[in-house]
Length: 265
Image (cartoon, rainbow, N blue to C red; front, top):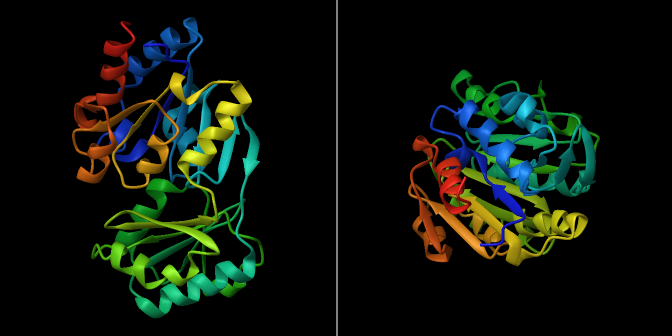
């Protein structure tokens, strides 16, 4: 197995149910990967800064694909950014609000994630779990910047239905209900797979030399960029169908243990 690039989703994949990971085991894995010139990538819906906060100094020399594949960050520098025009983003937010005013909309710009100040405290926990820089506002029309992405969290689990109700935007943006509780909306043509291809181009690494780990429906796109596709034991059945390997549960350091096994570390 000739692996030169490792890519992993975070929630439900690299991180356990408490959004934590085995720091000592990952540090040893990183050292082994570095010794064998294998590059490591986090690919997540989380803000890049949130990844840096969770992973700490172990993000050194690690690529972070954040904000649902709209940004690439490496050692503190942004290498790639994809945005949705402000007017289009506000139109999408308006449509989402009319469908269900109770869902939480997270409007992400290059600087901050905006959330309405009327959001319940319980929902704020979900927001801060994925976003480091958050600003609460009274109305989304206060935002004048272009958007990296628009995310929906729906505690009632109706995101797949909501995504279908706004599918008339599909020729203008990319819409994915990554799971029942989350929707991500990004620039048309931008997803985990396309942004991984950008890193592969930067590093001159082929998909045949890439292994990817995931658990959600948005990881189907991720798998398109890798020869070796690993779904977690806790992954959606639709993703498992696309995988050529099933890893142990994310609560048991499945990514780290699988890499140690496959790469004989």
